[in-house]
Length: 176
Image (cartoon, rainbow, N blue to C red; front, side, top):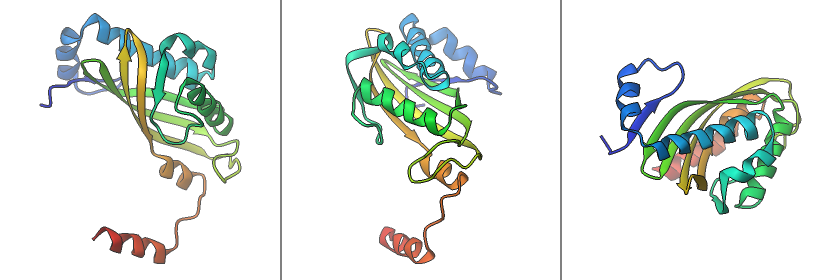
């Protein structure tokens, strides 16, 4: 529909989509998907950030807000901070979309909030999070990354108080 190739992840009910796209993906695109899977498994799920060194270009740019610096070093520190908050974090790739040198991933994460997360101390609560990541690859490595995690959803799950009603009304008025 938009020129992208849609690939359903584990547990998908769409076998048609998977059959069509597996035949259409290039070897390079398959490699790029595998590189991102290694980032998820080694970096986020296992906390092995040194394994990321060979998966990113030397001039990698991180565009996701919240990381200390917009480079691989900042990404690694961000992962380490996330794993301090959620030491049993497990991300799984649910969907993949391939378009040329870019790959978009929808992930679902789970973990137990045991360490500080923003202003909130560990709560012991189990949380789930939805994440969307877009990676641009160059020569088989990640050159750029844009990511959006449902941070508000996590904060609500660990007990962050909801904003006062007067603030929500004010925000709604500004949109209209």
